[in-house]
Amino acid sequence: MRFRAISVAAIAGLTWASVALAAGNGSSATAYGGAAGAVQSQVSSAPHVAAAKGSTLPFTGLNLTLIVVGAIALLLIGFGLRRFSGDKA
Image 1: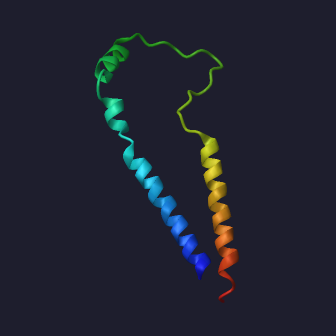
Image 2: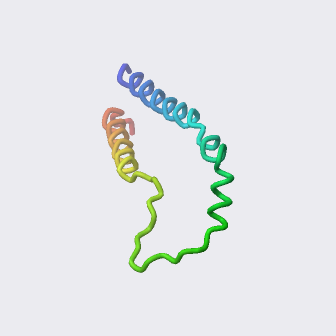
């Protein structure tokens, strides 16, 4: 019973922490405010430059290492919960 309470508290804490971190980032204000409109007009009026042959895709900012680590963590939590829950059926 104690392990279950600790597990629930840990999962709830991690969930609430991730929500708080996501809500705290005001990315829309920093990305779209300020001089962004002026920069957009300069980019729109610039002549189009063709991509060089053999170029790679641009980096979008998504760090796949974090995604893989998160997936492994979820798998380990799932296997741990299954192991400690015992056979009920």
